[in-house]
Length: 219
Image (cartoon, rainbow, N blue to C red):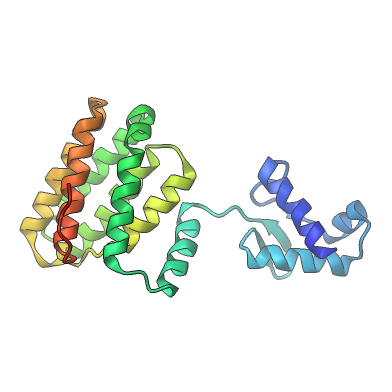
């Protein structure tokens, strides 16, 4: 019975009738579904475990909608436990990012481009610092995937991007400079709404990653 109650609450989150930070009253839920408050507590506990509800001691339980970062962390943790190989990450990332190109080019807007320009400039300013450049690079690729305005694709590609080995960026300033040239080409391709140009820039960028993971480029 508690699973049925949890499913009803989940449906409310999915259809928008329950919004982020809405309080879940045990009494009202028990009355609504004609169950005991113990059943409601078990339902809320189940949703807590799924990170869809947050319980704050002394205040109650509230709807929690995971953001991009939370979803990516869950996906990444699952892949890490499975001991996924780096070459599998690179291969999956390439296939997914290439498949997303038509959507990215079609849906990118001026706000997206402003974000990409800002991140590109951040990397340019941090090219002497491998650690800071590496973090900015991660944000750039997440922002690029968000240009498709498809949350599922952004979570998947964002996870693949986070799992990519960026140690090469720490080793060489020349690698960082070349990477940023490729980032600039991606922005130019989006500004021109040029799918082929974006494909070439992404493939070149990923082949650079592949060369540092011991794989042979195939594009």
